[in-house]
Length: 304
Length: 320
Image (cartoon, rainbow over all chains, first blue to last red; front, side, top):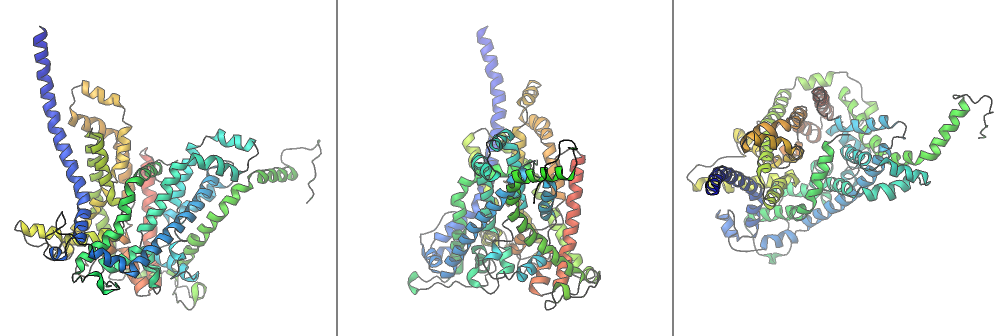
């Protein structure tokens, strides 16, 4: 009797299992395929950038590099204007993020306190600017009137206080920090500056990381404002704009100095190296910042 | 100023002295909150409200030399000029076309991917695929544009090379109008499909395991469970996101189009933001350009508010 039951059980198990296995194979293959589609452009361009020039010209590089040469990278690093653009981007991104975080933290804490009179009006005034934007030309004229065109500041100040980030942080402050904790600070005689610095901020590290990364990655990637505002001062072009002129529009040529870096006749390898030069910083830090991005986006989706 | 202590007899609730006193106490306790708001409000006033002032030139014959105040008012003359311009109609049409196509093709992908990811039980496999799927979201449109040309160019783009290897003819992915539209949408799907899964995955995790249990007891397989448990449970998220995306059909990413457009395919690339850029920054028609931008902002605002209202009426979370 026990024997038959085992056989029966085994039979059922096999049928279900078979169906399951087919499903699994389909899902895993599909997912692997889609993931590889996301990755492929980077692998291809990377392989191109380190391949021998002749192989690239002959269109032989698809997935794996053919031959090995770092000539293109040498040339990119020798190009002063590219390095300058990288420097501009770094300075702008860091300043932008620091100022933006300071403003966002201050406003978010104040607006999250219920005892603040007039907070509905002030929230409305700030959030309104997110849904109704003045537009390209009014922004441009404002920069012109403030004499900020062709300066560092036009890439930093106008956008560094983002209402969207404020909303996320405000919601996080009001839902994650228990009111009783702040009350106890008030009873102990601490002012709001003290409470913000020694109670709220230490408890909000994850969201601070998320918002700081939103600011930093957003600034690193944007080029629209630089395209509008940076006209004469070529030395103030951020990396993305430089890349646009160099690779996408191909309006500019490389200006490498020193003839000893190997002669590259074909711009394709150089373009690939350039794209990789701009992409690698993001790809390298991306696995570590991804979780903060996900978390910030989820908080942003749950409106207070 | 000397504060008079109210006499015990007439300590009615609302004497002016009493109110002043309580306001003073309130400010003494909470002035730091207002101090924290000074700089953020200053930034908002200078950079956002300051820009609103520039909107007046949509109703003026603006000359840079005369400034905002000195230029004469012309009422809706500028708008009439803009609406009757032969490039206005196509720009509105292109904006709607690109956004609607984007919605049709980019919207369902994250849902499908989230459902597939949900079926994958191997932890590391799931994590690795998610990391790869999210990657395109972190790149700038310039880089994506550059990658697109490396992949899709005629002559040496790798996709064309592969097509030729299997015996096909070259496809002008980015250099002819119809194909440009196709590639533009394809790249949009590629860029957003992974990141879009996040909200759906979150919604799926909050589905009660008991529902799956009950479905299994009733003999539902994985396909049936997905169809009758998971999908109905994330319907709310889907509807909200769909409505919110519908609210954005008049907006448009300038950076995305600008990084992908070229001289060979121009039929669909002139959207409202691109036309604003052409008129304003390149040709100096500042009033016309501002009016066009304002037109887009107002329609966009109406659509967003309307979609928020609809979402809330349907009992979902709104956006605003």
